Image 1 (cartoon, rainbow, N blue to C red):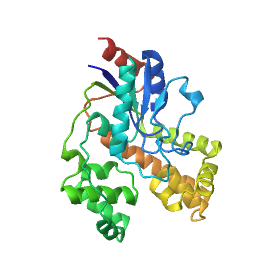
Image 2: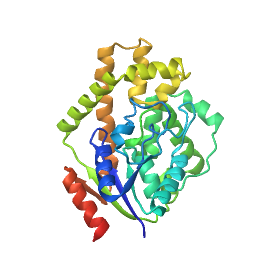
Image 3: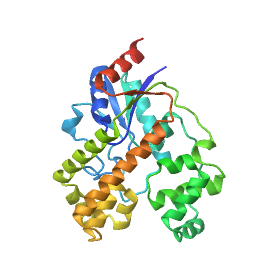
Length: 295
């Protein structure tokens, strides 16, 4: 049976660096499990690593589609499994790296996605409700998804649409786990350490031109303010700043808190998985990988 290593953890915990380290050491290639890095042009705000930072390691599922287009977890699942299979066939080690729990588990646990077509009537009805009302409804019907879903209206409406037509949350509809020998390594950080990492990374991204990236996507690529709202986190907050809805200082403060909240939701999901082996250092991760691959 082919082997697959997954690297999980909250945002800003160092997943990308660890993935590259293990790929270098064990002849691997990286498959990204990130719901925004799939979009072309969403580079700085999504934390997409540069060619130089890849250090020659092939990365898959970056820049898959235009940010103007909707991209679903089901589409991601198909492409990710295809990429993993291709890496394994070439005799290399696939390493799935990501902080979007729903995408990652869609691959490794093989969620069976229903063919639920958009329901315009239901969507129109749900659109009239506030986000808080929709989120409360999702929390009642699918508490597990509510704990981890990115807090934007479109995603919550889609989750409710699926439940409405199938009568069940997605994970309850069935699973076909990926047929690989699996090792999941989780990076743990203390809340204080993680908060510091998030602040440093945020400052770096602003310095790299994250605001200019959003401006360029809006003015030259035609991305609507509504779409930035759907893309969430950095893109939502910077779009609000560019529309003069909030001051720069307020935007930075609120974005820091939103990213910290997102990290907590990621950990809520990951902590439930007993398969994850938690590490604090690259050496611990390398030792686990060594044992998994060669013992």
